[in-house]
Image 1 (tube, rainbow, N blue to C red):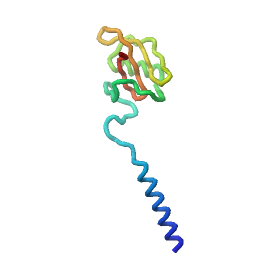
Image 2: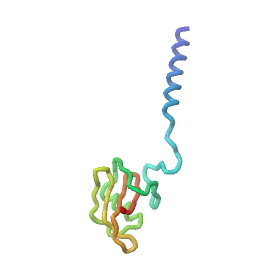
Image 3: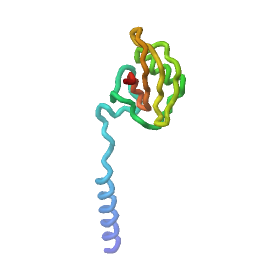
Image 4: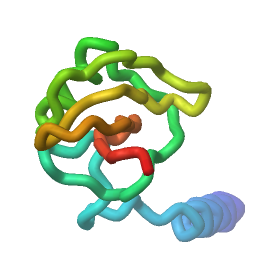
Length: 104
């Protein structure tokens, strides 16, 4: 009898813990790194950035920018650079999710 009560108690505790931690959503905008030309944000998202300087420059170039220079990573983990797109100079950012955006 004691074993069945103990087993029931454990089962209830595990069920309650599972109900409080739903699984991550697998829908759109939940990518760890976006593919080329696909942003999930129109502004840089702060976060721990694992892109190297070379990878950051490549991601910005894949987004259609050229003449990437002055590439630096800020305190929020966002890479920032000067670049050109369509012949016009602009400042751009690259966040940890791979979002490349012009800085306005």
